[in-house]
Length: 451
Image (cartoon, rainbow, N blue to C red; front, side):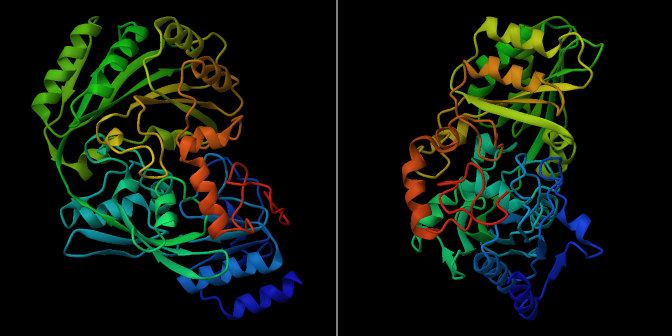
């Protein structure tokens, strides 16, 4: 049955059809990180066109085999891998910038490629730092980044999208055409309702930005956390700084505040105020302003160093109590650690929170910051640290940082927007062709080879 369908697929497919006996199969099946790396798809379909995606979806639907969609392959929960049909859209790599500042990008475009193309025209987007991250996954799960406090989420720049649905039809959606689907793509669209093949985004004029750093080698990390919690989420929109606490075996916990500013003078004043509160040898660095793309290249995305590690995270609507912070830091630097550990605090506020929670599928519009716990896959510290902080969190989770261990994932990812999202799912994918653990309505329509 499947072989017959595969033969028919090959006749209508312009891309590559890689089965397990193909020489390029092993490299094609592997995602970027460790999650999903052991999965062995029945077939990898490397699409080069919308027609290819239609054929790939039809093949999975007609054979009843589970599918997964891959753009960049960075999903921390391994959702871009499967033992069924892997639809790889990395070949959809067009970038078309119009004179009105709008850009149409294929679902396979990576951030580095997009930033470069936009920079050449004096434009950019509020997005992340990982050069190899796929733009589609970033947008469809929200999209936080260094310019977000001034310009909002990446998905807030989405003005249209082309989507291949489960029945093989192709829709162009925006606020007027298929508006419910368009709403859902703003934060809940990754592999849930169809395969997005292209996105149209409103760019911004590329700003001049200054890289800013506050090092605190002698300071009490708990004091740095307290001061950052009280100030960074309320800082002027032109300032975005994350706080990173790291622990290396045999070394004390280190705290560093870093980010970018659109106003170097205001950032210098703000950082020096923070440094005075930290005391104990805190040092401020404010670089000369350069185009955002240049400044971003000097700030590596710490999430890209997860590698064989694990990441768990949650949002916080209020500052964590002092005793909880102290306990977190004690746990972070605990004796016997054999691998690097990291806590990263990322500010929200600003433009992120000036959008109503129901205006887009991305519901997390009242949070102060995001806390990430990153450690080696074998280190139980990740779960212990997350559990300690969880008591004080909002119990909400950024959709682009999926967590397979959540007890109530629908509440965590979508909150009050879950009911509307479930209705959109029933309307656009009633047979649950697009399914994975924690997906909307997961498990209601079992399929062969479900990951």
